[in-house]
Picture 1 (cartoon, rainbow, N blue to C red):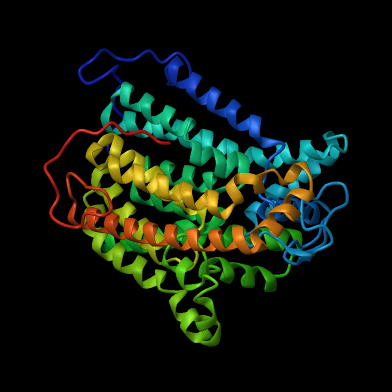
Picture 2 (cartoon, rainbow, N blue to C red):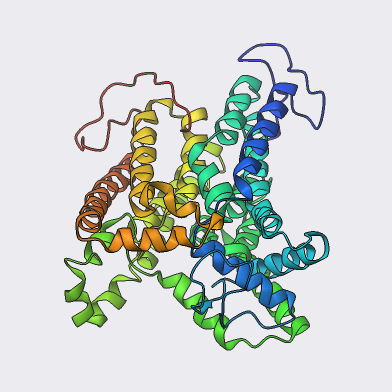
Length: 459
């Protein structure tokens, strides 16, 4: 995207907006600060009983100067769940283990032994990632439209987006850092800048690797080699960390493989196939499950090839369209579509709806609603996120999930939601392939109706 940033105006044709600090108007900063405060209010007493516990143990291992890629016991006085049960480290490249280790060391120095201070510190990277995403969305809207009113709507929308707040500030997932890198890449003036942002995203949490085939297909001549930059950045950074700290490579390779493949379950068709009623068939035929678990690779390659002609134009609308198609292909076929992965789709859809296709707002609302339904079903109506208060919370939810009545309802409700999300993602694929100017809800697959104006916002 080579567009020169436009001077923001109060609205189409309006006077230039006041920018008292950092290029943003006071109203935008109020939204950012209030969104930050809301997130901080959840930060120190909530967390996912498994993922957040893994961050704690990984940080403890790194802070002790140990290679974190192993199984670790619970930490007395600090762990929030699965006390006495060894858990693996964070299964990512070394960026996140280093961050958790640094924050654990900081807590040891200034936390006074208060475990809630540690939880607060571990939530800061995802919270700051959300804040950065909101600021970058403002910049993107200003750069592409020069409309301060729409830019303000963008920053407010993400600052107060409940789904993003729960994933980062409550759950403790750090995908917001990768989301911010995606939006930053959209603002790059040259394609290599966007590829570099993808490379940084891979180092943080590998997901942005799905955009590298798209970049390669869209480039011409020697520029086709630019995608190698996206591979070189995480490779060099990872090797440098392992050499400096003297860590071995064996377990990180296994961890990366598990991340690239996925673990089954989730809110797409895989959640149906791997559910208790059907999973015995896959268990008896492991080769079938292994083959299906990598369907996302050809899906992403095909989507990248189809979207390359749009990406090559460099127009913001076309670049968004191509990246959304690739993201949809990944989400539709990943072997385990978990709640945090929806953020990558939501941020791109939000920009597309705000700037180019407001009539797709119905699909936005359905996608958000179905994602929320799965999140609440899968996490026992959000009770799981209270686990930092007491290990008894996880014991209670585990017992609840195993109960004949609630457990059975939970399983079949999850299957129903997975079917809905699969149909919805397939509908979105058709919308972006055909570039429908007005998109009906997920249950309509026929010809699109005439455009209508819909008010849309996150949440």
